[in-house]
Amino acid sequence: MAQWLRAQGSLVGTAPPFDVAALPDDPVELFLAWILHAADAGVAEPHAATLATVDAAGRPDARTLLLKDVGPIGWAVAGRRSSAKGAQLAAHPVAALNFWWQPVVRSVRVRGPVSEATRQESAADLAARSASARAGIPPEDWVLWRIEPEHVEFWQGAPDRHHTRVIYERTGGSWRRSHMTI
Ligand SMILES: Cc1cc2nc3c(=O)[nH]c(=O)nc-3n(C[C@H](O)[C@H](O)[C@H](O)COP(=O)(O)O)c2cc1C
Image (cartoon, rainbow, N blue to C red):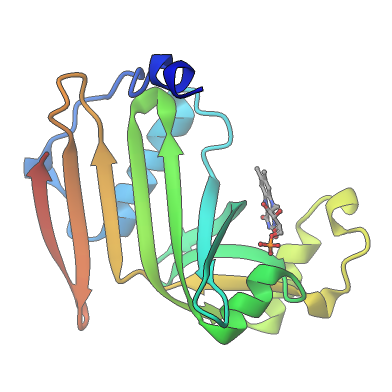
């Protein structure tokens, strides 16, 4: 199996130009540019991401879900309060969210504290789902969570392995930005 895995391609997409001299001050702006670009480049379901949480004993967990919104107050995801992630977020309201857009060799990582949206916002998210996706979900069990970004990393792979990492770290009310080629 190890041989088969080694034979699989990696970073075989085509990365677009990425000018680190022209980065926005706000990582949300760069994220919006990247996810829209990924969709234009044919990435199916570019809003699918891996949400990582930790349980009460400190053990990590992760699953795929859909990004519901992104803006000045964070990256929003939704699910059942009664789920494992619901219990984990109640015990440790922190999370990481990872995106991987293979055809454009781009990945984004977001980390930070998590808070629940208002009951109205959670209800509106549930109401916006298809009838089949709503079926069997009591409204009070559906929660929209927001990850308030403290650390956002944009990674773009290069065929020559000179990959680019751009890191935004929030200190107080402002963002500190750095980038490197690795
Ligand atoms: C593409 C995709 C999108 C998904 N979207 C969601 C979602 O938005 N919310 C959700 O709760 N689960 C979603 N799921 C199911 C989760 O991956 C997971 O099975 C479920 O949330 C239970 O996870 P938990 O037991 O860790 O809480 C999605 C799965 C896939 C593959």
